[in-house]
Image: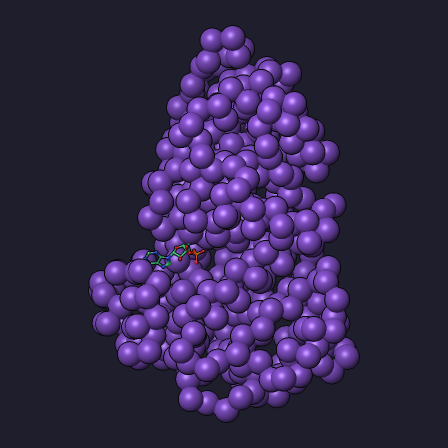
Length: 391
Ligand code: AMP
């Protein structure tokens, strides 16, 4: 391993055909409905195809999943049925989503992709792993359980992907990552994706990647540009009434509401129900079944409002969210960027509203400082506490 980190500065291709993808993959891209590669895809795919280690600085919504799944599938095409690629993700939801993306793009390739995450029985995952998955997408804790039981053999592993590496470290997965990496081949291709690059992620990259290319898309803290966002100054005890009022507007047809706490999420759901608005809560106290069910209903559109804590913040790919509402101001500016990234995914447009109580003004100022721009205020008569300046 070396310290060298190269940054890429070349003409970026503007069509998928120029990226060097095989015809099977070009067909998969067409059937996914993509016409041009996103910037992270245009830059990362040729490098991954060349077998290089890549560090992708890109937040969710930039098309980063296809940036690594497409070239990995190409690498695996026609090879032996062994576990040759491993993707580690911080959450179960992201694992499921990455697995689905893989399986979708690999539909006609005969590759078998399996996902492995906690909160569900080990048995079916063991069967899938022992059957010889070509690609394993896993959360670190559960994967270690399987490795310890020798349910999975990584002797032939060629590619390791660390997806949302910053998030994995935030969640305290560093020891598990170390143990997993110690159990897989040293000579491999490693890809690391992260929305942010704090020193811990940089250290991880230096440890696990070999001469990585750094591919950065946009500014780290740049909010998705298709999203228009606004702050509603509102006293804390009026937040629920304001939410119900906004939800009565028909254009808010698919809304992800974020609260700071699990208790807060449940309370918002109860209050909305009292107002005759159906909503479901999604947080860590819910069982995996309840979480999957809530997400399914939200995706299908049978439920319009999903109230979530941080758990849903990243990685969730729910097409067609029209609005994100921060019921509480996120404590970290970067969380704000990720949350509003929910609506601005690839092509969709959406709005992000943040409810700001008087004691949250300084947190909003910090977010604005990080974004490098003020967020417009919307004052609603009867709700506005009327004392806020956006300087
Ligand atoms: P990701 O950042 O990987 O979570 O992807 C965000 C969304 O963008 C997903 O819904 C993808 O299906 C979509 N997407 C990925 N690549 C493209 C592309 N080249 N053109 C249009 N949409 C895309």
